[in-house]
Length: 248
Image (cartoon, rainbow, N blue to C red; front, side, top):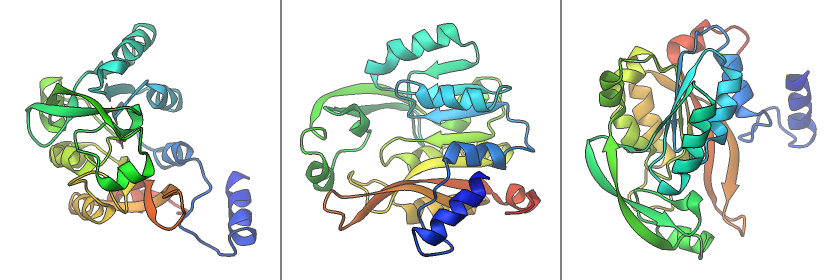
């Protein structure tokens, strides 16, 4: 019924059979795509307060979530949730393509915090929220090395919301992407408001080289004057899973 209603709205309101704007809830789509997969592990990069991790745990009751969040302001909330939920495992570090430490730019608006520096574009979008209030040194790890050091958990689903650093983090996950990952759900940037931030074109090319295809795009956002498309969220699906699903 939900799919029929979505199709009706696309035709009647958007005047097209298809549109870049998906009217479906992406986490519902992810659950449907993974219906035939035993989901044991989920990686949540940019977990913030843990609400998305909590949602994914409900949708995948057999899975554990490994939530990566380097911003110190979220440590208590994530620790408290871990005390209540044994399947939730916070990791107070950032993901990268190398290991060591890096400078985290903590901004006035927590959602703009990044290992990258805000550009003039972000300052235009959010003048006050893009201001860097402090810079803190945080540990950085690669996904592949973290997985190996932690007993090689199977990671079927990865979610990224790390403000332009998605490609760098994924570059450190080639083995995991090949071994177990079926879905990557990520924030994508058409015009990245961070210095040296990756755009959709480079992220898509990298994931295709790892055997993934772009499945759909959700919740595109524009600059306040509606003149320029800036970012959205996207599902990337492993080619073998896509081929195995009927009715797509």
